[in-house]
Amino acid sequence: AHYKRLVPVSGLVDSFQKQYEALSVPYPKDTVSPQVDAEIKESESEIAAYKKASEQRIQDYQKEIAHLKSLLPYDQ
Image (tube, rainbow, N blue to C red; front, side):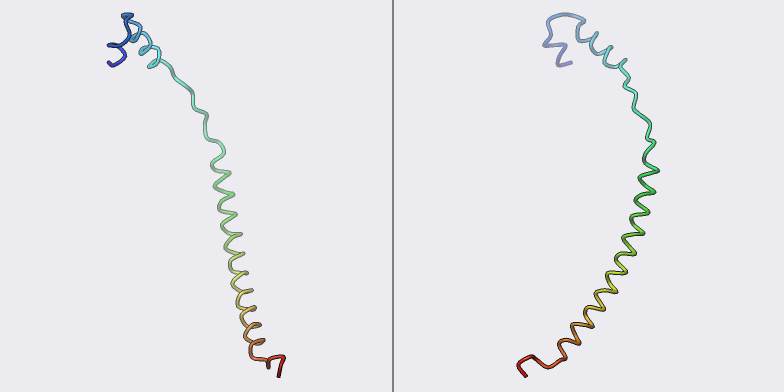
């Protein structure tokens, strides 16, 4: 409606509007999402295993730190 008031050539805006509404752009089908989802699930399991191993290493290091703190200082 705005362009119909501004464009002096009659029927030009209607013609553009009909052409625009008739335009159909094909959208490609999604064929990659299942593969990406599978990779995400695989990564999540790897992350969970890494977290578990890291927590074990943290506990081992905390035990080692506690042992080192229990030793006599060097100056003694």
